[in-house]
Amino acid sequence: MHPLKNDEHWMQRALELAALGRKTTLPNPMVGCVIVVDDAMVAEGWHMRFGKEHAEVNALNQIPHLTPALLSKATAYVSLEPCSHFGKTPPCADLLISRGIGRVVTAMEDPNPDVSGRGHKKLLEAGIKVESGVCEKEARFLNRKFIALQSFKKPRPYVILKWAQSSDGFIDPEVSAKLKRGSFAITGEETKEVVHRLRSENNGILIGHRTAAIDNPSLTVRSVEGVNPIRIILDPELKLDISGLQMADQEGVTLILCREEPDRGPVEDGVKILPWLDLDMEDWLGRLRVEEGVNSLLVEGGAATHSSFLESGVYDEIVVFTSPIELHTGLPAPLFPNVDSGKVEISQVGKDVRKHYIRTC
Image (tube, rainbow, N blue to C red; front, side, top):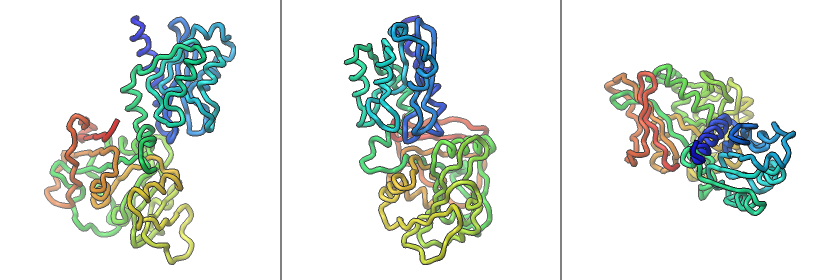
């Protein structure tokens, strides 16, 4: 096998391992590591959860018996530049040096300003051969949330807008549905599973107060394995009957965002009322990230809520599921922005069509 193809082969495996942490690592990146000696894999590992051991540590812990003399012939394939600073764990660059790894191949430089090339430099100064940029496009796509979190001028979560619509452009057959009517399913079971996977990969989920009052959704992860996201409702005037919310009975936290400090007694367990909506959208989103730990946010509706994000330009991805069903009348879907068609992926999910736009990657 050509040396470059060999490097790509092992890096693809490192990326597969990294992806195993897609539900648990943010705000850390997903990282995989494969250690190879004489074209044979001797150890592999990935970063399993935020605050826990990094991929290089988990891989090298599998081979404590291998000596520096043997590992001097080894190549460590890491999907992201090894860290060079003390964070929640010691620097992985130091570990690779101390174990005597002879060569390190990475997919990309770490955009974290605490690293940003310093890990590569430390390895080179220790006499380790370093190559970077192998499968970089795939690595950047996988860690697009992490990369974006490093680039925002003001802290906020990574925002994904998601809605379902009929083939003729409606999200509901009624313009003014009655309260507690329940949700109206437009898309099929296959799409439902994809949506639940999206929920499991984002630790916050947001809807407007009318969607909560009409649909009374649980906003939980049910069709796939995962932890329920933090549920967030925009209710400027606190009109919702919180006690009647189905989601309040579910495991996890529910946040109600309003304009003014409420003049009311204690609320239900698991519910917090936050008077932040007099702030600009980016400011209250920033508080969600900094104070409530919401690093990635899935916005599920309704139409007015989506339109407010679209008009403010505060979004990073848009996912739209279009059903073959025609409604002929009802509540119009949000207008998909005029974007570069080359950044829009079209795919089939059961009988539905998924349109996926990633703003930057």
